[in-house]
Length: 288
Image (cartoon, rainbow, N blue to C red; front, side, top):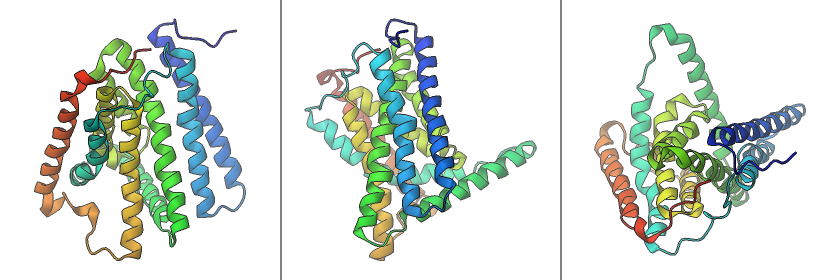
């Protein structure tokens, strides 16, 4: 029986991608259960998360791209246009206050009273996720910093961009058009993290990465931007703890500095539009 689905319908391809993701999720869950059967330290948890990124996102995306797309390597070329790389490097640092603003607004959202139990469950999940993130980021030496950059920034950036932009967005764009594909993939990207109170900023982040991928015609700029976003969190946390940074980056753009967040949002949108102006000089991602 052939696993080649390149000449089947988009719906069948979508089911194939879902099946591959579920297989990766099952293997990742089995790995977690096996690791949790013995005492686990924080370093082991980081390696476990790294493996899960590969199993749940990277491996399914690679298999899908080579069994369900006609040109699986069409979007892995290295863009030569400087504006693409300037935007990829500057977009996330520029967007930090905007992310903080949307996170602050997202935190204000309150569900109806009839959904209070769901809201409490989501809040508990959010607190657990924040506690784990804090534990992951608390490193005392350069070796720990390098492991964090590998497990929390480098591998997730490649794995998630392969899946959400290189597989899911590309598949949807083959029948629904670029904009719907970008926002749908961004919605799934935000939802699948299971963090309600970070949903809006992650949705906008996913959309920005989606437009960067679409306008450049390559996965590399979105991978670089995704890495920069994650790496900034890792490096700033390390610097705040070890160098005693006097400014809390996470509050810039929220509360009394909301106007900084609006300026940041405008600058981020301008960067994305600037990329789009040069779209005629780049090749759009090939369709499945």
